[in-house]
Image 1 (cartoon, rainbow, N blue to C red):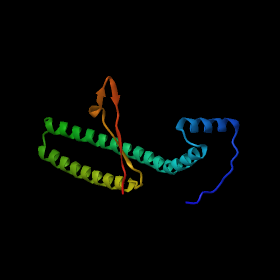
Image 2: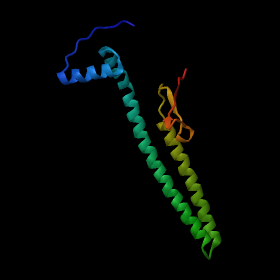
Image 3: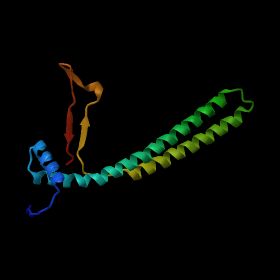
Image 4: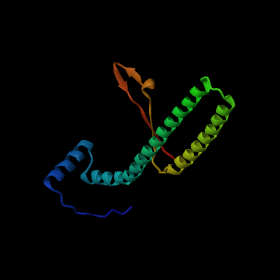
Length: 146
């Protein structure tokens, strides 16, 4: 890949920050700037993922409300209801409605899935962390999709 030379002007404060970053990472200033440009590519995807997480959270809240309704239906079915057949048909209708809602929500969630080429990171859960000499070690493994 051919490299192109660019000249930029920085304030003293920005120059200090860039120098600190390059010293901290033990990289040249150019390498730090290139890395910052590369991370910008993923920012938009991450923002979209956060938006989808909020939407999915609202779906989960809706499922919670549906669960509460089912519990209320079960309570009334188990109470002394005079007309058990009518209550049974109402329950069946509500179960069919619930199944339809679940199917609709699953279809909406499928449309929200984002396909990006970012390697997945596996992090060991706290239950699988090995403790050695009083220090907890976290192991991060990268899987590259090829």
